[in-house]
Length: 129
Image (cartoon, rainbow, N blue to C red; front, side):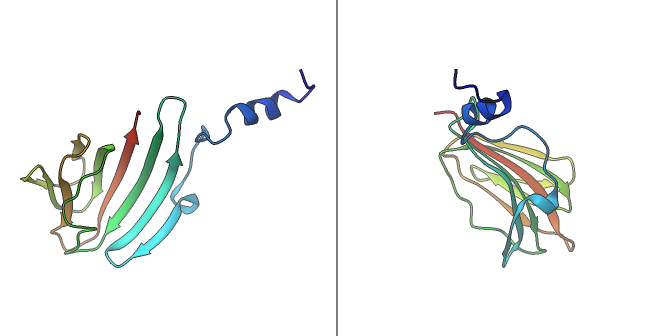
């Protein structure tokens, strides 16, 4: 071996991969958008996935981040505050705290805040290949 400390070897082995650990809201990358505050906690490859993105969106009342859209990643969304509607493949469901959405790759989906207070949801998108 090169005589490098184990910590340095571990760092080299995991270069580019998302680090294990925790991250709170204040450390997430904040993007202030017209529709609300978008936070990206993690974005990159993991040991098992080509790409993984995890974040949150505090969506302003009456707003949607975008019209229903599709992408090659699979996605989960978890609503933790507020009320709204999620559409998946044209089916609209009223949602609130504790609602979880799963959407397969390349399927049309979207969310709108129909309430009078911010709607907070967390999202997890990934590609395995």
